[in-house]
Amino acid sequence: MNDIFDVLAEPMRRDILVHLHNAAPGDMSVGDVVTVVGSTQPTVSKHLKVLRDAGLVTVREVGQHRFYRVNPEPLAIVEGWVSVMNGGPTPIEGSSVGRLLPEVDAAGVGRTLGRIAGDVVALLGDLPGNSRPAKSR
Image (tube, rainbow, N blue to C red; front, side, top):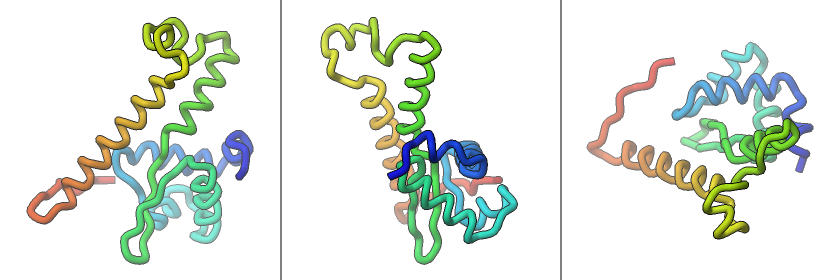
C-alpha cells in the first residue's frame, strides 16, 4: 500500500478528492468524476484505484457502474498529524475521555458512528416505498 502522503502528493488525486468531498453526502460515478476533472476514463480509474487502495475513498457497485465517496477517516489522521506538527494538541489530549480512557480514540469512534448513521440513512432510502429527492449537481 502506498503511504497516504505519497497518494496525496498527486495533484489529480487531490482534485478528485475535492470533487468527491463536494458531492457529499452523496457519491459520484466514474463518469461524473471524468467530467469534472477533465481527464480520460482510464486515467481517472487508475487514480481512483490508488485512492481506494489507500482507503481514502469507498466504492459502491450497482451493476457495472461504480460510485465513489470520500472516506474521511484517513484524512483525519493526516489532519491530526498536521495539527501536531503545527504545535496543536494531540487528538484527545486534555479531554475527560483522554484522562479516563487514554487508549480510546474518541474522534475515531465518532467518525465511525457518523459513517454508520449515514449508511443506515442511505439504506433506508433504498427500500421499496421510500423515496429520496434527486440530487442536483
